[in-house]
Amino acid sequence: MPRERSVVFLLLAIVTVGMTVLLTGQTTRALTITVDSLTDDFSDDGKCSLREAIQNANDTSDGQPREDCSAGDPAGEDTITFSVQGVIVLSGQLPPIVDDLVLAGGNDITLDGD
Image 1 (cartoon, helix red, strand yellow):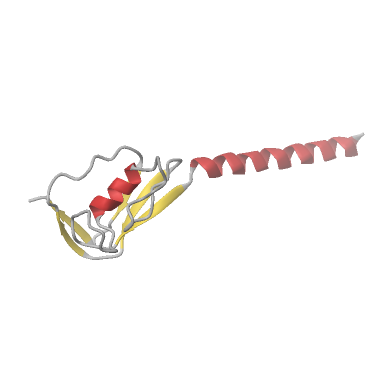
Image 2 (image 1 turned 30 degrees about the vertical axis):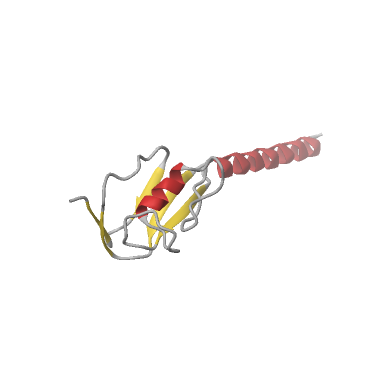
């Protein structure tokens, strides 16, 4: 009898841990969109601007991102990183951010909204 209880307890513990990992994994999923241009436009130039990255983070409904950037994730928080250093001179107001979004620019990026 004690051995049967041990087996049942062990199986219950395994199922509990497995469910926790599955549920936690789904809620913490996130995608990274990398900005590799200091321009501030929507052009099909093969480079991902900050404006395009924000738009892709917002526009996840159809799964078709702007060609220059990765798509955002409708099920998680997106992160925008920068592979360039310098100043991005904004040509106007950036698109509104409509979902959880992390901008990870560190000290290498400056936004100039002159």
